[in-house]
Length: 158
Image 1 (cartoon, rainbow, N blue to C red):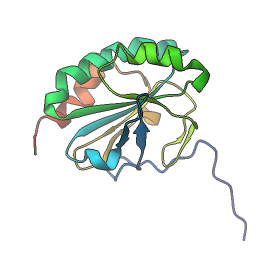
Image 2: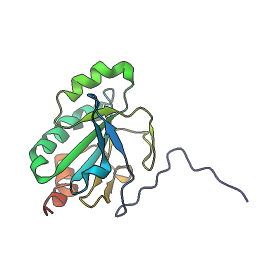
Image 3: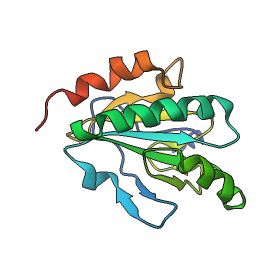
């Protein structure tokens, strides 16, 4: 029997199915696990300080997260920067309304290898993947895309 290796960027993402588990260790050492965020709408965002589209997207995402926190929105920011760039990551993180941590390894179980930035994944209150960032033609968030993808999920409070 021949076993074919999966490509390094393979992932197990299927819109409408449970999102793969992921947890963020923030720059200040807090541990936030996706499983603990049931009942919230979650955006898992991957970015880096050296990524110009990310630097443009982050203030928009931060303002949106701040405006919708009371409706149960949580954004988790995973930086692909190395520990050597921690000062730059902290400088950016200090301007954001959501928690940030270093990803460490670009191979993320269930999400695949994070090979282009920015990329985000949106998860509904029941823990289901609603938006697969790999399939987005324009991966950076825009105000219009946030309104189309995320805002409808924030409507019904449970």
